Structure formats: structure tokens, C-alpha cells
Length: 440
View 1 (tube, rainbow, N blue to C red):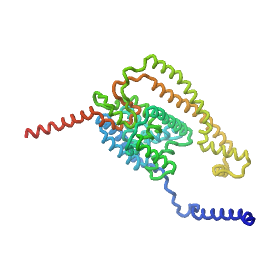
View 2: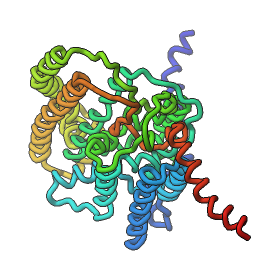
View 3: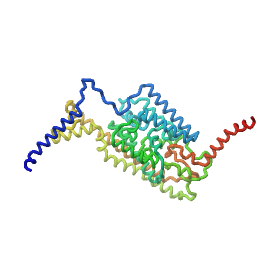
View 4: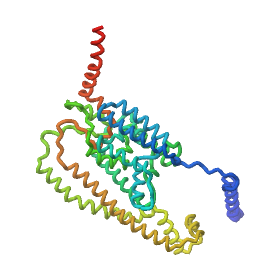
């Protein structure tokens, strides 16, 4: 026993040396002077100039076709066919890049960094779906977005989500949008791309944790319509706001509503609202609720700003310069003889600590201001939601909420008035042929 205790440290040291030697043998350092081949990157390579414009042309054509199919043709099979095409082209062929959702970060970064340049194609991918939303609603979500498409194809047995849960979780995209803009504006990270749950499928590679999240969302998506779009998508948050102002709105019925309720049951996104009862709440009570919400608005904004300001130090540590400055400061204060890799590289290069500490101080100040603004924005989003819920709603028929509707067209074929219109249209087309045959 005594012999074992005495020899154990030497055995452990020997095993450690053997393990290290085996690691070096298995993973030898690269020899850059003998034809070393760089490993392939996980992100798509930049496209040639004309191919960028090809992507742009495909996006514009897809958005135009989606508007035509949703607003004019009211054709669900056509929308689904466009969805499959977009999944194959923008998803698997283009590997999810350029992406309108991720372009939020490029735009935010370029706005806060004067020396940065943003490609025209990225600006176009960011703006085009928003412009189309002002005319025909969320047609980008309908059949152009590859993230929405991959969720749409797995939606097999949708269940109804309680409306209060939809309204509550529907605030998360605004928070995600604010965080993405904050981190991109400060140059710390592009979290939308970093945590994209489906891009790993498009590129057939990715981190294990993101792949698990992607599979989990697809598994949920079998029963819950497009969970990422409903509860996470930051670009969807912008589209929601603009769709309320769209020139042409998606409607369930092409004519009068029979109030059969079939469309509401067919919608997997809870975007169709039933008629309000005739005996609604007294106008005086609604006005009182609205006044309370308006008084609550500045309180929620101030509370949100203060709450998020407490998280500013945590937010600032997402920037590598702040983390490096903290590491070096801690190592110097504790007289540590072991350094982190980043700290060792910084010291080996002989860079100035004062410059680094000033940069970190400026970044902390900017993150502090950003956290106040982000908190105020989220508080305003919550107050805006409460004000919207407190406003008196008066609906005579089943109506689509254009902010929540992703224009998938599922409800069209459930409307008896729409089916009657299609039969009449089909018979009117076949009538001249029958008449011609009889005359012959």
C-alpha cells in the first residue's frame, strides 16, 4: 500500500506524458512549408458578382410569385410548391446565406461602424421582403424564407395553441431582435447566424448543440406550426409591424363570411380571430383599461431600461476585447504566472495594455447605453402589446390578423365560399368548350 502511494504520482505523470505524446502523434501540428492544404470553411464562399445578382433576381421573382399566389390566385398548392423551391435554392443550394434574417446584423453593424462597407446584395436581401410586406403582407414567410419552409414541410398534425400563450411568447422575437442589434452594433457577435437552428442542416455540418436545437424545433414543428417563426424569429418581428400597414391584405373568404369556423380550426398559427359577441364590454370600461395601459407605458419603459442596465456588464463580456482586458487585469492583480491563450498572444505581440483597457472601458460604456435602450425598447414592446389587447375589438366575421398571418394559404380551401368560387370559375371555363362541342 505504501509502495502504491509513493509511486502513484510518478505513474500519473508518466501516463500524462504518454497521453500528450499520443495526442501529438494523432494530431500533429500542421507543417505549412510542405504543401499544407487549408481545411474547408463551414461558411459559404463569397459568390461571384453576377451570381449575387442571380440570387437577388431569384429573391425578387419568388416574392412577386408569392404575392401573386397569395393575394390574387389564393392557391395553396402553388404556395407550397414555391416553399419547396425556396427550401432547395435558398436553403440547401445557397446554404442559408445570404439570409434576410441574418442581414439585420450586417445592417446594424454598418450603421454603427462608419468604416465598414455592406454589400448591395445584403442590403437588398434585407429590404426587399420588408417592401413587399408593405404591399402584400408576410409573403416572404409564406413561401420564400428557407427557415419557414423547412418547418412548414414537417407540420403534419397541428394542434391549437392557447391564444394567451401565443400572445405572451410572441414578445420573445422583439427581445431577440433587440439583442441581435445590440451585439452586432457593438461588434461583439452575430447571434442570429451563430444560433441559427437550421443552417446546420443546409450546410450538412455544424455544432452538435445547434443541431440538437434544430432537431428539437423540427420535432415540435410536427405539432406546432413554425415554432421558430412564431416565438423566435427577429425578422418576423419587423414583418409583423409592417404587415399591419400592407396595401393588400390576405382574406379568408373572397366574399361574405358564413361564420362556419372552419378557417379558424384550419389555421395552425392562431392568426384567424372569431367574430366578437354583440354584447361587448361597455365602452367606458374599455376606455378605463386603455387609460391604465397608457399610464403604464412609461413605467414599463423605465422598468425595462433599469432591468436591462443591470445586465450591461454581462453583455459587454460578449466582446473579445472586454474579455481579454478582464483576463489581463485579473492575471496582473493576482500575479499569476499562467496566462490564457488570448492573454499570452497579446503579451507576446507586445501591445499596449493601456490602449486595450481604454478600448474595453469605451465598450462597457457603449454596452451600458445600449442596455438602457434595449430595455426601454422591450418595455415599450410589452406596453404596446398590452395596449393592443385592451383596445376594443369589433369583428362581424372571422378575420385574419395580418401581423400574425404568415400567408401560407391553408385556410383558403377550408372556406365554403372560396370552394364555391372555384367551382363556378371552373364551370365557366368549361362552358364554352361544352357549347362548342354541342355545336359541332
